[in-house]
Length: 206
Length: 206
View 1 (cartoon, each protein chain N blue to C red):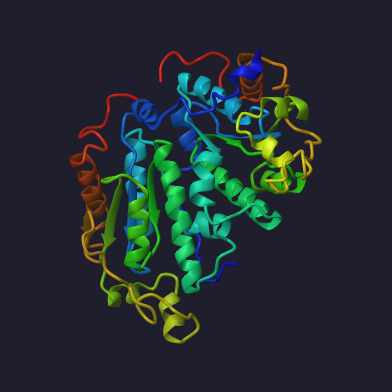
View 2 (view 1 turned 180 degrees about the vertical axis):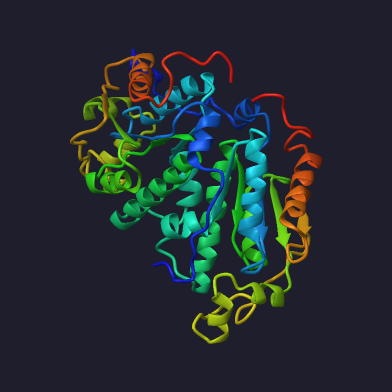
């Protein structure tokens, strides 16, 4: 709850001025999908491409959030919800800062993702479903998590003992189980161009 | 085969690359001081100056944090501590994103500020004490908070019914109770130049 002794202030450096300086718009690219679907890989691939174009970007993922901002949270239903809420609010701050922010979290529940979508103006939350069959994710099992989940060592593991709710109307679906990374990256970039977030061709200089 | 590439999900866009693109280093400018000391005013004044130089900046303050990321927190001792912790962790994310991040919170307790300082490498947390006598802040009383605190309508109000612990060794002290805003801004900018965060003269183009 917010006390009444919080008064609104005005900043002179607006989001529009930041976007003008950057030469691109800011949006939230929300990557969602099963563990092992390639969300982080895709997010970082997209970021690399955008950075080379001179865009200001940042990836929020388990690496930099779970050990810091959300270090006090566990994996209970309540904590998972709060985790996504804080990530959404932080993404919103980056959005206001003019940054193209990419988030890579399983974020399995529709309600949680819908709440984040509602935080920002229409068209600024772009949900990207990294679609990859469970058996492919489980075969990859890079972190050995599926094996441990099957053995009952990890509770409420998405896809095994906890549901993953597929996006109903995501802005983009990427078949990360089939496509090579460069094609997946290209489809995200194409969407950003189509939506006018970035320019079609790299700027001559920045 | 795509599956073999899945391990690659570390970030290739490093802070150093972001700083090179931006043409300046990133630091946390942590403004601390009494309510009414002019923290937000100074932070936004500094941001305006930096933006005009082509720097990437963002101000975290009560406006964008208390209603969002920390909307679940009240003003108890525990909640205030958690508030500063989250702000510190968020500032750290902006730091990694290459952004010059400015924070404007009373942050009255030394321990809380010290914890944030420890989150980041040496020299990247710059504590700026906005020094302004209590009676000046209370005379200004822009938000009418002191009056309400004196009337007992606000509990644990810093300076009235809750202590403000002055910084022991801040990187900068600005006498916001005496100096005109432009002079205060100039002293912060001078510090940033001296520390090599920004260049002495505005870049020719950005």
